[in-house]
Amino acid sequence: AAAASDEKQSSSHEQQTSLVLNDLRHYLTGVEDGEADPHETNDDDDSNENDHRSDVALPVAAIKTLLGVIKRSTANTMMGLQADLRKASDDMIAFVKSSSPNNSLLLGGRSHIALASGCELFLKYVTRAFLELPDFAACIAQVLERGERFADISVHSRDRIAELGQAFVQDGQTVLTHGWSRVVSALLIRAATVHNKHFSLVILEGRPDAGGIKAAKLYADAGIPTTVVLDSAMGHAMESVDLVICGAEGVVENGGIVNKIGTFPLGIVAREMGKPFYVAAESYKFARLFPLNQRDLPDMGGGLANLHFVDTTSWHATNTTRPTTPKSRPHGDESMEDSERETVRGLVRLPDHVKVENPICDYTPAKYITLLFTDLGVLTPSAVSDELIRLYQ
Image (tube, rainbow, N blue to C red; front, side, top):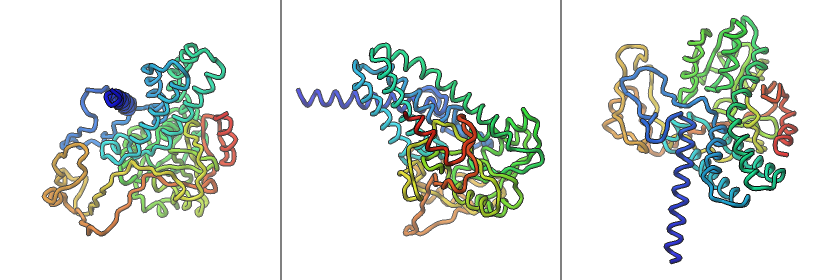
């Protein structure tokens, strides 16, 4: 009987985990469970509109998922509800940290830090709500009501940041950016379209997920003169730009940021060449972390376990003739068969004993950051710790 009970409980936990992850996928892609898989791509489609992220930021998707957990929870005490929420948070973080190719596509190169900070803020809010309103049913009703408004608040936060940050972009300037950040794109597009500022944009390509290239199309469609350069050309490009603006996966206690790999050297180059380095990030990305170097960062996961390197000078991407692409493989199979390798023109083979590392994020210390544009206002890096204390009080 005990074994049957344990099996039933395990099955229930697995079902809850499945529901949590399905909700998270839905909020990140905008696709309902059971609809066509957004990661099924058409090999004949030359468009680069293959980033299927919805307009919902990762922390917001996590909080909306946790609201679903509250609605489904059968707990009748705050302790039981907190246990359900904590398990759902752990399940989402474990999912984001996994190295599945599908997860990497779904997350678009993002780390779990923003998701973890969103979960932590929400759990803190639930606890505070219960202390203010001890009646369990009334507390749940209030949490659900305010939680449903959180997505709207997050969009307004992005608008506020865009309005604050656009004032630092002037006519005739050249802006350098890195990666694809929703809040940075909102800021730059607002400066160009709402305030009619005429500036040009240089964007790093954003290996390995081509985030910069995907963002470049968005900026070009908005009428902003855009130039894409190789990540390794950041020093060369820095001479001709006036300022740098990037987003952040997380803003840490010491005022530094965790962001797409390559942000740290970008900050170093900007400082050495006397160019202001601005960061645009929502306050729900403020994380209670205090890294001193790259080794202090938590395990990010999320990167593809196997990267393949191609000499793209061996073919012309703009020609009508495309290099032959590998045949479609089942989800979860990131290997490349020998026969497929031969069909990829310019593929560089590495010996098996050569190790390839693929970190998705790095840490940029506060000393390289000029200002942070946030929904709490324009902050110096030294002001972040005070704002974190207020957020988590």
